[in-house]
Amino acid sequence: MKEKAVQCLLAMWGAIDPIYYACSRLEYAGEERDGRRSIFRVRPLQYKGETIRLSDGTTIAANDWLLKIHLHNVRLVRDLFRYDSDIKKGRYLLEQVKAGLPYVAYHLYHHQHSERMKGIIGITMLNKGCERLGFETVDISNPLYRWFKTAALVPMMAVARPGLSPFSRPPKYLLMSKEKLFSLYGYHLIH
Image 1 (cartoon, rainbow, N blue to C red):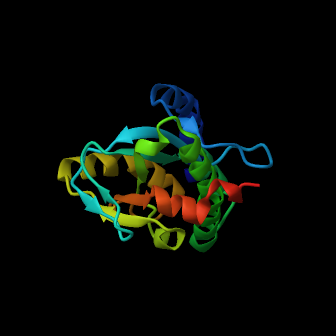
Image 2 (cartoon, rainbow, N blue to C red; image 1 turned 90 degrees about the vertical axis):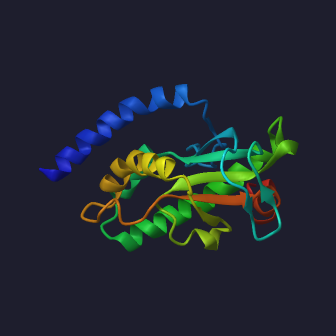
């Protein structure tokens, strides 16, 4: 019964996703070799939070431009249903993010406003192990915004990790400077 409810929720989510995609000004960050699109969808964003200093010396302040990264959550959750353990799900997620980051680098490098963008930013509750990929995590300091993002991410967490409290890990910013992104995932790695 629970699996049917999840499938129904995914079907509704899948129907709404194209509308969200169209309204949010998102773009896919490239296509992978097998013709399947990257797990990332992106859009330029003017940062509005507190000043952040990354470990490589990059400072991100209010009104700086970043490339906002979004995981394609509907696709991701559907794919995660193939795996029966959290370890396999985590490994799959890590592989998908790692495979998608060269496409994000390519997109940023070729973006018409690349020179003014300082890096990439995302918000997720799935932040365990992201440092291995080059990201830095930063707490969301605004409690109202943190609550809003938690509420928005709870349905995905409930479907992706049934049985675990979706409130067990607060959402965080994931950040990477443009220079670090190009160094680790430069577009030359796509070929």
